Length: 618
Image (tube, rainbow, N blue to C red; front, side, top):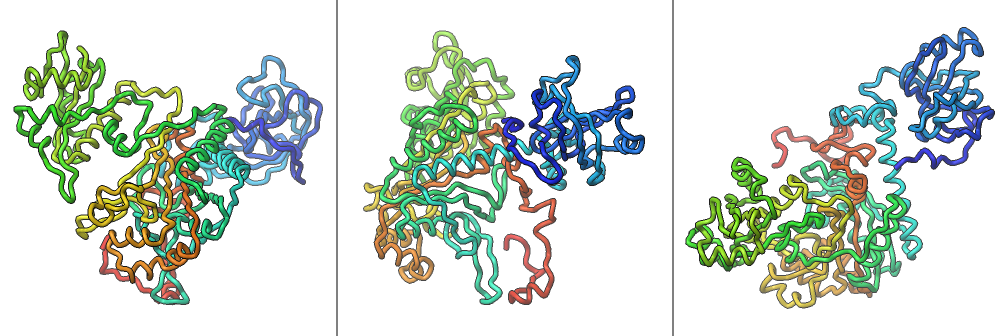
């Protein structure tokens, strides 16, 4: 990830070299350098200063015999992060003073002229390239002093890596005939699953723009307009509760193609991403990527974003549990599917060789682990020598049922079996998925030697909304239903599948997309399922309906979340590490103190006033 060797050739009025480019062959050259004082050392009358810029570090030598007393005294007053300019001669270091840890470690610059450009106050935390990453500094402190944090070499390398990724994406797409086109930031609200950031209009009081959650409709309009292949490095905004992997404003690589289907999107993105891996990580990515239907991903992994580096798989044992003498197992297995519920299920996870790796206390704590999914507990069984079942749940699978359970799970002596039963199959699957993820990491089962990517396909189109007693789209409603699902739109909305797909990297979703609706009649039917009358559909999406009626080609697209993508490529858990000026989990900027109150005159011009009697969330 080093960038010290990637220094361009440049010369300005103040400098003719960077702090990362000088080498042994430059000995004898006179140079002008600028940068920040990384550290200063006093060795027997000589002063040594490491000068740092974005490109690297160079050791400066201040010799009192070559400098006037005033200049040498000024050098002695230098402090960390002072900004200076120097001029001097490049010399080879003595053999014993060379450093193989520094790209410039074979040379030093003997300073003949020093100019203090700016004195720095003591920074709130170490910036020096020799200091560790600063992970012991609270993130809030780093965000408050982000202009200082961004100066740290490790942070600079992350942002430069992000730049390399974006450049690789742009060049790969350009080579494939894509055109980069910017779409509006001030637009209108559309139903895309999260709250919009609203911007009041000064010229039309009572009307609001919405900041885009994605360029979705505009890129579809560009396909209608005949641009065929579009992409954009797009800024997007979502007013939602935040996590470590979410920001209120984020960047995505957005693309759309005409006269294509899913296979074309898969091939294109796989080719583009393979170039990113090759250019930015020096790794040959295995293609084609794996594929899983949504139902299969949930059944086998308990998640629609499975980490395929984890070998553990979930099995359905509902039919076995239906005959159990334990009432909660049989009742869960017998729970019927309804208009709003998927029916009951019993799921099991076999953990090979783990019978003795978890203590009784750790096994009992698994119930707390799955509680956020809605599951009421986790049963466990250990397989002893000879196939005997032991543990809290063994009596729930007596005799032939125990044999059937072992056969279904291919359980061997020494294995641990975890069982979750629930009247809602989605809860049982999610609980087992959580167990799989946690135990895979805890027991060291995840193979971190390579990246694993997988396409998840055939998602449900709708989910039931108890607040409205109606249906909402699981993602945006402009996706084309699967051909064999279209006839179920009105009568069985929960059975409708989409031509949508997600791309998952090592257990994290990095992108999503779909084949779009280009048939206006199908688009109307989808909106009707969501409760939009024909008049409401025309009022909110009339411009899209008009475009679809004007000769819309079949088209499809996708988007890659660049913040998360870059963080994962660098092995970072927090995407704030690859965002220059991130916000907190309360959507605040600690550096600029945004959001902030505005002048009453500004509110008046917008026709707005602040009500103090309304609390957040009302």
